[in-house]
Length: 383
Image (cartoon, rainbow, N blue to C red; front, top):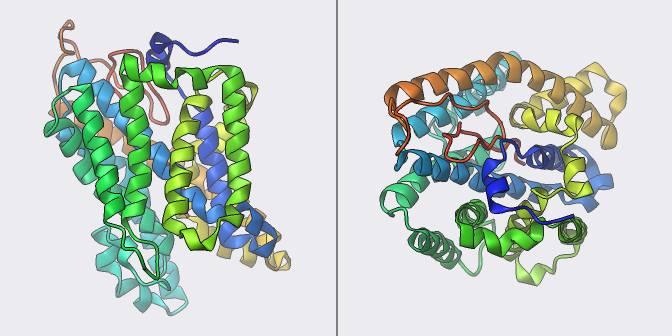
């Protein structure tokens, strides 16, 4: 019953509770899309911002540890890993969406928007677009096109400067949100990712880690997790006069505080790290992308599902089966391909090390030993 030490955090090779959190968030998204009024209390639509926060934390941690290992970050390697992590499954599901649309005579709707899909401008598509849930991929890919350059090339490896830049970007994006809008303003989604980036920057530094360390004590962590669950339930009662942007910003901040608690040895954190949840979390990216096809397949296979809970559960089962196939036969091979190509463009030894290039760790939510290079990762399903 003690808090996590900084050296223990740096030595952690896996964060299984974060995979479990991805699984829960993915199921929340399915409940929102297909569960009907019975699941409205879960407010699953906001669960996508859990993935944004997780993404910011994990990928920034990857970059920080690569910098610590080698003295700098290779953007070429990062973009290669990122491309092969995200795009193969994304493009495959896009092709399946188009092929199914061809079969039912609605391919024009997909073809008219193909430029948006291919240029990852999905977040600017009309609200009735097919494959609309891919808007989050567009948000993340655009963010990671610029974030490594801003945080690791323009800013030297000085904790205070990087912290100031991260906070400054959050403030700038919040300032860009117009006071009166009919739809969610795009900057708030980037604020959510940056909340995760901020936690990564702070926890990577010993003095910053000391700020969050009390949250890793099992008792404090349990309290934080319980409070976050209560907040998730209370989201449905958020006063409309405060606006959804304020809600998302508050939710992202709460999720950022949750992350250190999930690194603890508390019973709840270990519960999220149970193998069934980790299994779903590892496949949640493909689950998210295939969700609309899975829902239609579930209804076609079992028309008696009707609407609501039946469709929600059927879609989860079909999506998980399809996602397992995609994970084994597309995601993992493509991740390995990206890893090999990245290694070719960064043949270098660790800074101050023995000049040998270490073997990258397995993909997923995986944090290697101190000063070890990290493989790229991505949060799963969004909503």
